[in-house]
Image (cartoon, rainbow, N blue to C red; front, side):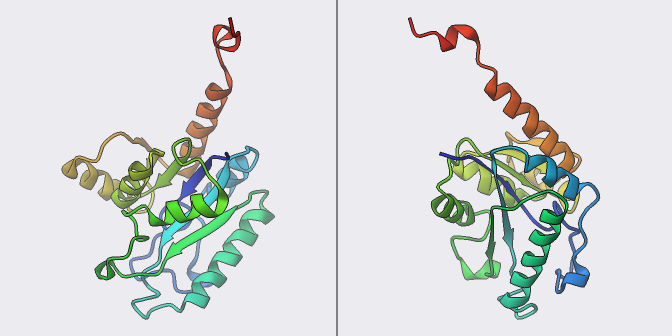
Amino acid sequence: MPRAVFIDRDGVVCRNREDYVKSWEEFHFLPGALDALARLAQTDLRIVVVTNQSAINRGIVPAEVVESIHARMVSAIEANGGRVDGVFYCPHRPDEGCSCRKPRPGLLLRAAEQLALDLEGSYLVGDAESDMRAGRAVGCRRFLVLTGRGRRQLLRCLIHGERGFAVVPDLQAAVGRILRLERQRRTVPLEETVGC
Protein backbone atom coordinates (compact mmCIF):
# COMPACT_ATOMS: atom_id res chain seq x y z
CA MET A 1 0.00 0.00 0.00
CA PRO A 2 1.55 3.34 -1.01
CA ARG A 3 2.46 5.99 1.52
CA ALA A 4 2.15 9.74 1.07
CA VAL A 5 3.45 13.15 1.99
CA PHE A 6 0.46 15.34 2.78
CA ILE A 7 1.32 18.99 2.26
CA ASP A 8 -0.68 22.04 3.29
CA ARG A 9 -0.86 24.71 0.59
CA ASP A 10 -0.87 28.24 2.04
CA GLY A 11 2.23 28.97 4.10
CA VAL A 12 3.98 25.78 2.97
CA VAL A 13 3.86 25.72 -0.84
CA CYS A 14 2.76 29.32 -1.44
CA ARG A 15 2.67 32.57 0.49
CA ASN A 16 -0.10 32.86 3.02
CA ARG A 17 -2.41 35.87 2.59
CA GLU A 18 -4.61 37.20 5.36
CA ASP A 19 -7.19 38.14 2.69
CA TYR A 20 -6.96 34.71 0.96
CA VAL A 21 -5.41 33.76 -2.37
CA LYS A 22 -8.18 34.89 -4.71
CA SER A 23 -6.51 34.47 -8.12
CA TRP A 24 -3.49 32.94 -9.81
CA GLU A 25 -1.89 36.40 -9.78
CA GLU A 26 -2.00 36.31 -5.96
CA PHE A 27 -0.48 32.82 -5.79
CA HIS A 28 3.29 32.98 -5.20
CA PHE A 29 5.41 29.90 -4.55
CA LEU A 30 7.55 30.19 -1.44
CA PRO A 31 11.32 30.17 -2.06
CA GLY A 32 12.57 26.61 -2.49
CA ALA A 33 9.10 25.03 -2.64
CA LEU A 34 9.29 24.02 -6.30
CA ASP A 35 12.74 22.49 -5.85
CA ALA A 36 11.58 20.63 -2.74
CA LEU A 37 8.63 19.17 -4.62
CA ALA A 38 10.90 18.13 -7.50
CA ARG A 39 13.17 16.27 -5.04
CA LEU A 40 10.17 14.61 -3.42
CA ALA A 41 8.87 13.52 -6.83
CA GLN A 42 11.93 11.28 -7.22
CA THR A 43 10.56 8.99 -4.48
CA ASP A 44 7.69 6.51 -4.65
CA LEU A 45 5.78 8.51 -2.03
CA ARG A 46 2.48 10.01 -3.18
CA ILE A 47 2.41 13.81 -2.99
CA VAL A 48 -0.95 15.09 -1.81
CA VAL A 49 -1.96 18.70 -1.16
CA VAL A 50 -4.56 19.07 1.62
CA THR A 51 -5.87 22.58 2.20
CA ASN A 52 -8.65 24.44 4.01
CA GLN A 53 -10.22 26.91 1.56
CA SER A 54 -13.04 28.52 3.53
CA ALA A 55 -12.95 31.53 1.18
CA ILE A 56 -15.26 29.45 -1.02
CA ASN A 57 -18.13 29.20 1.48
CA ARG A 58 -17.43 32.71 2.76
CA GLY A 59 -18.41 33.87 -0.74
CA ILE A 60 -14.98 35.40 -1.41
CA VAL A 61 -13.67 33.00 -4.08
CA PRO A 62 -15.77 30.67 -6.26
CA ALA A 63 -14.85 26.97 -6.16
CA GLU A 64 -14.09 27.10 -9.90
CA VAL A 65 -11.41 29.74 -9.27
CA VAL A 66 -9.82 27.68 -6.48
CA GLU A 67 -9.78 24.64 -8.78
CA SER A 68 -8.23 26.73 -11.57
CA ILE A 69 -5.53 27.96 -9.15
CA HIS A 70 -4.84 24.35 -8.17
CA ALA A 71 -4.62 23.26 -11.82
CA ARG A 72 -2.10 26.02 -12.56
CA MET A 73 -0.17 25.20 -9.37
CA VAL A 74 0.12 21.55 -10.42
CA SER A 75 1.19 22.56 -13.95
CA ALA A 76 3.92 24.82 -12.55
CA ILE A 77 5.11 22.07 -10.20
CA GLU A 78 5.23 19.56 -13.08
CA ALA A 79 7.07 22.05 -15.31
CA ASN A 80 9.73 22.21 -12.60
CA GLY A 81 10.14 18.41 -12.46
CA GLY A 82 7.74 17.78 -9.59
CA ARG A 83 4.37 16.12 -9.38
CA VAL A 84 1.18 16.20 -7.33
CA ASP A 85 -0.86 13.01 -7.05
CA GLY A 86 -3.92 14.69 -5.60
CA VAL A 87 -5.30 17.99 -4.34
CA PHE A 88 -7.99 17.81 -1.67
CA TYR A 89 -9.61 20.94 -0.25
CA CYS A 90 -12.27 21.79 2.30
CA PRO A 91 -14.55 24.68 1.22
CA HIS A 92 -16.30 25.02 4.59
CA ARG A 93 -16.21 27.83 7.13
CA PRO A 94 -15.14 26.89 10.68
CA ASP A 95 -18.71 27.37 11.97
CA GLU A 96 -20.15 24.77 9.56
CA GLY A 97 -18.89 21.83 11.62
CA CYS A 98 -17.81 19.67 8.68
CA SER A 99 -15.60 16.60 9.01
CA CYS A 100 -13.09 17.69 6.36
CA ARG A 101 -11.82 21.00 7.71
CA LYS A 102 -8.49 20.55 9.47
CA PRO A 103 -7.91 19.89 12.38
CA ARG A 104 -10.44 17.15 11.62
CA PRO A 105 -8.85 14.41 9.50
CA GLY A 106 -11.54 14.17 6.81
CA LEU A 107 -9.33 15.41 3.95
CA LEU A 108 -6.63 12.90 4.84
CA LEU A 109 -9.16 10.09 5.12
CA ARG A 110 -10.72 11.00 1.77
CA ALA A 111 -7.30 11.07 0.11
CA ALA A 112 -6.38 7.73 1.70
CA GLU A 113 -9.58 6.16 0.41
CA GLN A 114 -9.29 7.53 -3.13
CA LEU A 115 -5.55 6.86 -3.48
CA ALA A 116 -5.42 3.66 -1.34
CA LEU A 117 -2.82 5.12 1.04
CA ASP A 118 -1.17 3.78 4.18
CA LEU A 119 -1.80 6.69 6.55
CA GLU A 120 0.34 5.47 9.45
CA GLY A 121 3.38 5.21 7.18
CA SER A 122 2.77 8.67 5.74
CA TYR A 123 4.04 12.17 6.51
CA LEU A 124 2.34 15.54 6.89
CA VAL A 125 3.91 18.97 6.39
CA GLY A 126 2.00 22.04 7.56
CA ASP A 127 2.32 25.49 9.08
CA ALA A 128 -0.51 25.32 11.62
CA GLU A 129 -1.67 23.59 14.76
CA SER A 130 -4.69 22.36 12.79
CA ASP A 131 -2.34 20.54 10.39
CA MET A 132 -0.48 18.90 13.28
CA ARG A 133 -3.74 17.78 14.89
CA ALA A 134 -5.12 16.35 11.64
CA GLY A 135 -1.90 14.43 11.03
CA ARG A 136 -1.83 13.09 14.59
CA ALA A 137 -5.43 11.88 14.25
CA VAL A 138 -4.42 9.47 11.46
CA GLY A 139 -0.94 8.54 12.71
CA CYS A 140 1.23 10.51 10.27
CA ARG A 141 4.77 11.62 11.10
CA ARG A 142 4.44 15.41 11.21
CA PHE A 143 6.57 18.46 10.35
CA LEU A 144 5.67 22.03 11.28
CA VAL A 145 7.35 24.55 8.97
CA LEU A 146 8.18 28.03 10.24
CA THR A 147 7.08 29.69 6.99
CA GLY A 148 3.55 31.06 6.70
CA ARG A 149 1.91 31.06 10.12
CA GLY A 150 4.37 28.50 11.50
CA ARG A 151 6.11 30.66 14.10
CA ARG A 152 2.85 31.85 15.69
CA GLN A 153 1.30 28.42 15.38
CA LEU A 154 4.24 26.75 17.11
CA LEU A 155 3.40 28.80 20.20
CA ARG A 156 -0.26 27.72 19.93
CA CYS A 157 0.84 24.08 19.74
CA LEU A 158 2.93 24.48 22.88
CA ILE A 159 0.12 26.25 24.75
CA HIS A 160 -2.44 23.61 23.76
CA GLY A 161 -0.14 20.65 24.44
CA GLU A 162 0.19 19.52 20.83
CA ARG A 163 3.49 17.62 20.72
CA GLY A 164 5.29 14.87 18.81
CA PHE A 165 6.12 16.74 15.61
CA ALA A 166 9.39 18.06 14.18
CA VAL A 167 9.91 21.79 13.65
CA VAL A 168 11.75 22.73 10.44
CA PRO A 169 12.45 26.04 8.68
CA ASP A 170 10.53 25.34 5.47
CA LEU A 171 9.31 22.74 2.97
CA GLN A 172 12.85 22.16 1.67
CA ALA A 173 14.02 21.21 5.15
CA ALA A 174 10.98 18.99 5.70
CA VAL A 175 11.64 17.16 2.43
CA GLY A 176 15.30 16.74 3.39
CA ARG A 177 14.25 15.12 6.67
CA ILE A 178 11.70 12.90 4.91
CA LEU A 179 14.29 11.73 2.37
CA ARG A 180 16.70 10.84 5.21
CA LEU A 181 13.95 8.92 7.01
CA GLU A 182 13.14 7.07 3.80
CA ARG A 183 16.80 6.08 3.35
CA GLN A 184 16.88 4.80 6.95
CA ARG A 185 13.66 2.89 6.34
CA ARG A 186 15.29 1.00 3.46
CA THR A 187 18.34 0.11 5.57
CA VAL A 188 17.29 -3.06 7.38
CA PRO A 189 19.81 -4.79 9.68
CA LEU A 190 21.01 -8.15 8.30
CA GLU A 191 19.69 -10.14 11.26
CA GLU A 192 16.19 -8.88 10.49
CA THR A 193 16.38 -10.11 6.90
CA VAL A 194 17.40 -13.70 7.69
CA GLY A 195 14.51 -15.98 8.60
CA CYS A 196 15.93 -18.64 10.92
